[in-house]
Length: 353
Image (cartoon, rainbow, N blue to C red; front, side, top):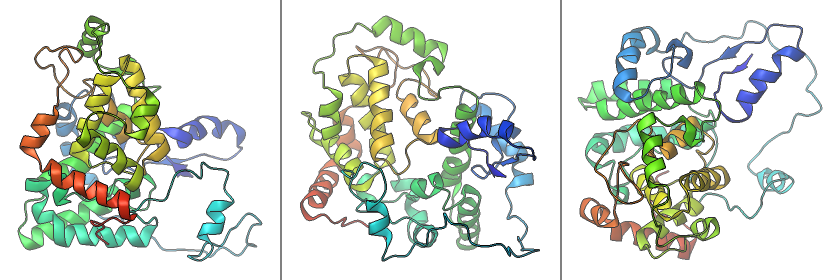
């Protein structure tokens, strides 16, 4: 029995392992509120998947039955068991064959208990502000749940139930958050489960493919190499701060991640190179990388789950985001200064728990 997960290692294992076994092989969807296989085919926008999920929610949007152990395990502890404690984690990490140049996040602690603590903080302190302030990075009004969701340390069902229960008890409108964690997130899982390679631009809708064909030769000035982008070496002070947030926190605030991706599209030699750079940076640094949400959010920059907008160079009909609009809509200076302080001190002044 294992996880029905549509990307990365789990996807490959679920294809290759059953044929090597002489016992049944079960996969269980522990990622979505409404299991992704309940939606029969690929959906192309939130407005098409929403009524399908809403129809099924009464069946699935409730706490599961209490799980009880009927028979305790009586076998010997296997040789590969490793005891993990706070004191031995540094040595265990040092022994791993990984890229040790990637520094630990200044903002997030892994594990079930820190995840529960952060969820309580969000529900009790931040949820009332979420709808109005979620697109203001300096306000820190989002849930920060994506790393814990990605690693299975919290389930979207328990997060959604906690939010719903607290909102009903305290007369808070939580519709905007439930839309994100159920409708939008499960649209991502629907996409990833219905395509072979979720990071490829070939999966985009026809209008987006046609748009790229028309504008593929538009001059890009300036252009930055993948290495310059990874190091955050551009003329754009705000964009550089978003990339540094990725390096320091292991995550970029959602609204600014849209801007981050749109500028990489604008500065890269080709559309696919831009997508590859975004995927590679997330795979290397992001605590929520290699996730259906990651691939969907990246391809959203190229028109996935979006609509056509007005024409402009390079973007064509793709939605455009500019530094000037970020300055009008958000407190960019506060955000830039916060990232600068993190870089200087090695501490996150906005760490919530």
